[in-house]
Structure formats: C-alpha cells, structure tokens
Image (cartoon, rainbow, N blue to C red):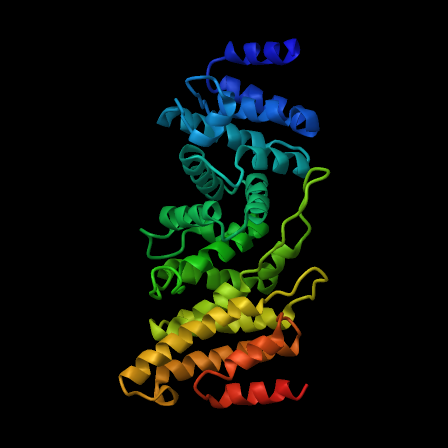
Length: 367
C-alpha cells in the first residue's frame, strides 16, 4: 500500500501535462497486472483526465465526470496522447491503454476529448492511434453511442463545411484501414436510416464521394473488420460488423430521396466488393436482419404510394430501388454471404412485384 501511495504522491508533484505523460508510462505495467486494474483506473482518472470528487471516491470520479480540466489542458493532453501512441511499441499494449482510457461508458468530457483526439489523428495521419481507435470501435460496438458520436464528429470536422472530400479523409483507408471500415459501419447508420427520426436523410455529398472512392479503389476494405484484433492476454474480441449492409441500404433507398450519380457508382463498387469477398469462418458479411430493415423502409414507401393511388410497380423510384436490391441479393445469396436466407426470401416476397427480384426469388427457392 505504501508503494501505491508513494506512486501517487510522486505524480502529484508534477505539473500538468507532465503528470499525464508520466502516468501513461506507468500504466503499461499496471494494466499488464490483473490485480492492479483498480489502481490503473484511479491514475487515469486523477492524473490524466484531472477528474475529482469532493469525497475522494474514485468510482464517482469515473461516473460523474467532475473535471477540473480546461480547454488548454485538453489540448495538452491530446498532444501527449498523440505522442504516446506514435512511439514504437506493441500493438496489444497500445490497444489496452486506449481501451482503459476510453471504455464504453464515457463521461461527457472524455467523449468530447476522444472525438477531438481521433479527428487530430485523422488530420495528422497518425496510424498507430487510428489502429487503436479501430480496435476500440469494434470492442464497444461500431453502432454504440460512443462510436456514433466519434463518427458524427469526423463528419462535422471534415465534411460539413466542405464541398469536396479533404485529402486527409481520402487517405484514411491507407493510413488506418480497420478504423476506416469501422467508421463506415458507424456513419452508414447515421444516414438513410428511417429508424433515426422516421425520415431518410441522405449523407453529405462529400462523405458519399469519399466512401465511394474508398470502396472503388479498395474493394476489400469492407472486409478489414474481419482481421483478428490484437488484444492483451485474456481479452475477448467482440464480434465484428462490416459496412456492407449499411452501405447497401444507402444505395437501395437513395432513389427515394436523390438522383445523384454517385449512388450508382457506389452500388457498382459494392457489387464488385461482394464478388471479391473472401469467406470468413467466424461470420457472414451480411445479416438478414440488416437487409430486412431495407424491406421495411420500402414497405413504408409503397404504403404511401398506395395511399396516393399510385401503383408501386409503376413508380420509377421504387423500380430503381428494387433493381439495385435484386442485384445485390442475387450476388450475396449465390455466394452464401447472408444469414437466415429463408427468412429473407419470405419477406422479400411480400414486396410489390418486380421482374428481376421475382427471378432472383424463384432461382433461390429451387436451391
């Protein structure tokens, strides 16, 4: 106990950000030792994030997020973290530190700082930090609130006020392919998703162009999440997700809200990706449940057409949606890339008839 107390006392003698820099170095040994996890969390809270509680209860520091950190200190910490993660070292150690700093339940301050940290890493092409951030996204879930907040922050920082894709974003798949793929999973969930507010909001043009360029130049980028994670001993890798289902939702539903040629380009790119996928023993790239969300959105649109006394089979937007959907479903079914295929086929039959989709369904009912 005396050694623990002495360690904290020595850190308290240091000014910020030197106490944070020193704390990061000490964390490597603490996190490797299972019986010192609580001490590691205390040091992170007190000396890295400057979290305090009136009664000194560390658990309250971590949950209530009472911080004395100002904007300048946040900037100093971001620079310290960029420098730390840029040093040569083991990926497992870096990932363990990152996951300890930013878990799945973030205080508002840690969440804000994380978004700024990752945006800085994207701007500076800091590959080791982006690699750890990609691992973090998979471990907390690419569609979890913390990951979605990071994705939204990147869109705000690099896309919202830009008519064309910034160079830093164009290069992201080359610098951090795992992070880029998990970012696509998250950002795909933010747009053309009527589960969010009940409306189909298209992605910003520059974001659409960036993702289209990524998937066109590197068809196997969508498979990056299937690569084994480098985690500390004893850690369990969470199931991966690919961006395919979300991006297919974009291209299939896009005719309902947009006539941009970029969606056709992305559609062709995704079909090319589906044809080049390498099967993984762990999971299939497409889950029927994700594709059923597309069906639900189309059913809602057809219901509105019917109310307006318009036959879906004669609506150009619906026909274009179904043509793209049928092409993707055919390739995915033929390659055995979809889970619960029978369930999907049954639900697809409930949509208003479409010539190509009828052929696809008839073909796979016989198999």
